Amino acid sequence: MELSLGEEVCRDYEHMSRDRAVFESYWEDIAQVVWPNMRSTFRRGDYKNPGDRNNEQQMDSTPQLALHRFAAILTSLLTPPNQKWHYLRASVPALNRARRVQEWFEAVNDALFRYRDDSMSGFRSQNRLVYAGIGAFGTSTLFIDRMRGQPGLRYRACHVGETFIRDNHQGIPDTVLRCFKLTARQAVQQWGAEKLPAKIAEHAKNKPDDEFTFFHRVRPRKDADPEALDERSLAFESVYVAEIGKHVIETGGYPTMPYAVSRYDQAPGEVYGRSPAMQAFPAIRTLMAQKRVVLTQGHRAVNPIILTADDGALDVSLRPGAIIGSAVSQDGRPLVQTMPVGDVNLGRDMMEDERLVINDTFLVSLFQILVETPDRMTATQVLERAQEKGQLLAPTVGQQHDYLGHVINREIDILARQKLIPPLPDELREAQGEYTIQYDNPVTRSSRAGEVAGLFRMLESVLPVINITGDPAPLDHVDWDVATREIAEISSVPVRWLKTIDQVSEIRQGRAEQQQQAMAAQAAPGQAALIRAAADAKTKGLKAEDLQ
Image (cartoon, rainbow, N blue to C red; front, side, top):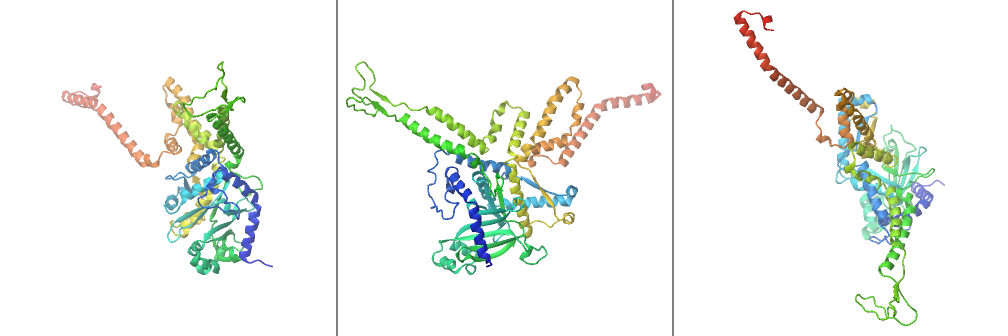
């Protein structure tokens, strides 16, 4: 028997939740020690009271602090606030030389950052949750949609526990099914009472805070037709279903995938990612066990166990200033002593070893490279350190550019449909609007630091030769105008601090004019003497060559 659309979505949910059951158990173990607020949120039927204390499994806060730092590190490396961390360019290089094409891409880029950084969009907070999600669980999803009721963009980080994913044949997530809860009041706000099952609409009147389960499935449309005038023109189909009665609430579609999936690392044959927390989980469990032992031994060292002789009663008082009789023998040998405890310092050293592994895995240690003895490092050494950091970060952090590329493509589509960006210039329209994304963030700049370090190493080799020979000709091989601009870019010098090319040309022209005037002023006394001599010679009837 053919299933209805609502039954099909519910069946998909059952299959996809069964396929990831092992991951859910793993996520729960990680949440207990890395992100306690996420405990009991991965499996159907788990219940978590708002405000519950969830950190009783945490003996040490290092993993949780490392996760927060990891999210902050990715934010500063990939999407730094108040900076333009990407640019758009035409896929055909020749088009980038056209003035109108340059202006169009600049306008689009400005619009992206303007609406993305709007206080109502939620990009910064939600994107940070995505970074924290991949740090803890390896997989996280961002939902990008238009702003309701006004132009702009709106973002929502979807918890991994409510998000189910399928990859296409190329390993790209093309199907997302989200299982989420809304109160009856919230459901009416989103869809209206007339679209909801009667039970939910009734609860919205009498018990508006009762929660109900809903599904949202987005997948490629099988009957897609770009030329159609209805929903078939949209590449992805969308359906909202209420679990009660498997009731279809709303169908529709999207021209681009609204869910951007980020995965930190993947094992062969797995859809969901693996995280730094998973890599460091053995060290995290060891640290928790060590902390428990050190706390026990530390308690014994601070409040020791008293040992006394077994012959005769002895009243031992631990009160400060107390006098204990019969605590020593007639020859002065103590009859009371404390039980020896283990080496607490050794326990602390072992814990530091595990903390170092955890911080390395969450990239905290890498981020401290440049703060190690910076006063003793030359400019070249600093650049080489930056290059090393870029080489180490690029394979892991740099792969998040795939996730950000999906976000940017979705944003451009939404803004274009809201007519918040200018129409394509003719040159780009003929090229079907093909564009590429060029990232300009600390990760890409760190990877380019080797170029600057190479220039400084060359100067260190050439300058002694110039000092010996007095000939600056070797420096003529460097295009200093190009090098200076790119060094400023790689070093994150704000553009507003740099003069434009036209301003630099004016300064150079003014400097040349001043030099000419100075040379003329120096030559003026000699020229005046020659003029006077020529005049005197004329009066005396001498020829000009006689004055030479």
